[in-house]
Length: 310
Image (cartoon, rainbow, N blue to C red; front, side):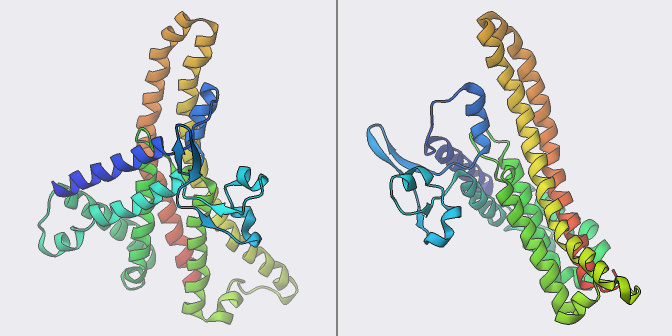
C-alpha cells in the first residue's frame, strides 16, 4: 500500500510541476496541444516577477548548441542548459524503478510480496526468460540481464507516463531515444571488444571473403554497425510521437469545427473524443510493445557483437 501511495504522489507531483512550471505562451489551440510533446524548460517567476529557468547549468561556448536559452542568448546572456519537463519524467521513471521494483528480489527468493511486487516480478522474469536467455544463453545473458532490465523498465515507464494527463512524453523526443540507442551502441562496441579483443572485434566484422572486396565489405559492416542504433532511435521516437499526434489531431478537430460554428464544434466533440480515447487505448499497448521491441533488438545487436560467429 505504501508503494502505491508513493507512486501516486510521485506522479502527481511531477505532473503538477510540469503543468505549472512550464512557461506558457499564447498560441492557437492546435499549436498549444502540440507543444506538450516538445521539451520545455521549467521556469520560476510569473505574475509580474521575471521568468527564470529552474536548475540551469552554465555551458561553455563550445557547447552552445546544447543551450536552451536562445532568447536570453540573443540579449547577450551566457548559454545554459535548463532542466526540462522531459528530464523531469526521465528522473521520475528512474525513481519508479526503485519504488516499484524494490520488493522483486525478495519476492523471487521467498515468494512473498504484494500485488505490485508480483506484477513487476512477472515482467522481470519475462524479460529474463523470453527475451534475454533465449538469445544470449543463461551464462552470458545473466551478465547482461541488469542492463536489459533497466532498459526495458526505463522505456516502459517513460512511455506509460506520457499517457497521464498533464505529463510529458520523454520518448517523443528524438534526443532521448538517440541517447538510449547510444547506450546500445556503446554496449555493442565495448562489450564486443572486451569479449573478442580490440583488434579481433573489428577484424571479425567481415566474414571470409576474397581479399579484393574485403575493404568494401568492411565499410559495409561498419556502416551497418552504426545504422542499427539509428533504427532504434527512429523506431521508438516515431511510434511514440505518431500516436500522440493522432490523438492531438482528433482533439484539434473540435477547435477547427468550432471556428466554423460553435454548434458544429459541440456536435463533433463526442466523435473526436471517442476516437481519441480509442487511440489512447491502443497507445497503452504500444507503450509496452515499444519497450519490448527496443529491448529485444538491443539484445540481438549486443549478442551479435560479442559472438564473432554472428
